[in-house]
Image (spheres, rainbow, N blue to C red):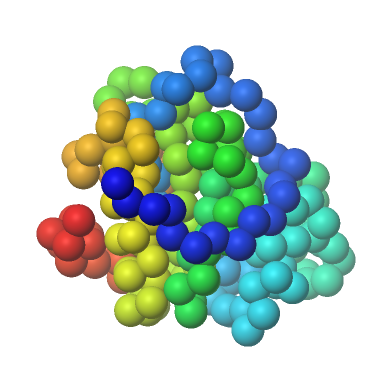
Length: 179
């Protein structure tokens, strides 16, 4: 029995009950950085953390205007140094996927867990991030047996044309073969 990886708990208001409790069968990998392409030295005081906690000052950066009123959070963020922050309990529906579909089933938030990697589509992810992502993914595969390696996807796979993350910089072969 695998123990959960160490996770710092952060409270996001951006979640609710799943329509069917226990219906968790998909893991979605994302990336995020705010402002785009910039990474935080202090995750607990970052713009990403503020966005997920519902406290982002949208006047702080000109590029944040589009985020006004946005209610979004993944279950977890894995920062560049490998730290994992958990924003939403895995049994709750986090608001991470938006308009999405997987194998003919819409509304992926209903049945998925969302993991954000601090990063961008075209910059390599860190060794620490891959290590933490593997540890967290192995734990989730054990806890939610309906998730299999074939049911681990990128945001781009469930929202094609709308989303591109985790992008070409994410090494799917490395990640999936290490699982």
